[in-house]
Image (cartoon, rainbow, N blue to C red; front, side, top):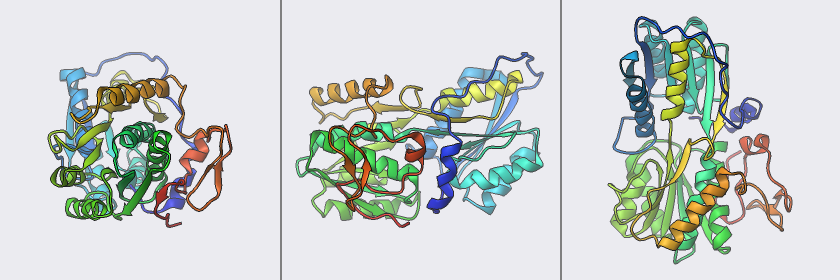
Length: 367
């Protein structure tokens, strides 16, 4: 993950909207299992960003059995520590290494230059190399759907959003959530608190509590722990789970979860190494590709709302609903500038370069 907006803008040139498939190749199963390494930016907790990637690792083991041996290193800081850990994995015989954090992108590329025969998967990065692929998910699709649920459930019409850094990926989520919420509750507003950190449970909790003191009754977040969900449970508020289902943490608070599904992609890429068909690629998949899913509704959510959200999810998967397509009226940012003309949709390039907050969001982007 990353603090600098400008560095992320070039992403538009690299991502394909669907899975990049490798061509069938000559299959020759190695005598030894494929060694796959995983580097995690935070500890493995019961739910959240790192938990979902570790579930992806376990899915690889379940699918390939004795044909794969996985290794993971958790709680690795971005920067020099990441480079050291990635280099160690490459030097100890790992044939493919997954680095799921935006701030791992540059260390991954640096190590890849010194290990040309090792394959690297930069998850949420956007730069590629002959032995480095990039992959990300259309998180914003799930955020829009969660916004529909939040718009139906709120009584105050005020939602909160606890966010790490104002990079395009996070801005996409805030804007899609707000657009989804206002599609069913046109006067709804979303208050944003920036943390300048991805994983800091006490700081995440404090931000949530501050928002609850400002008439917020439903909250979303783009951080790495379950702290915001726990705060909602404590205060009797509602929350949208992110990365993982968090009903264990917030049995009364959770209204819906936006979950990341990495198992199929990770398995596909390890199998490609095994079969000798791995090629560098850029992947940007969403609901249609099975990388994003919305569900795991809480007990407070009426059946009619669940049905509405799931119907919208099907529409997104079929391409009939696009979160960043304007209706009959243009869409403006929260400073009054038109960002989507009436009836027009943003291109992938525009989405990947997003550096504004939509009308209805109370917050600012540091440019």
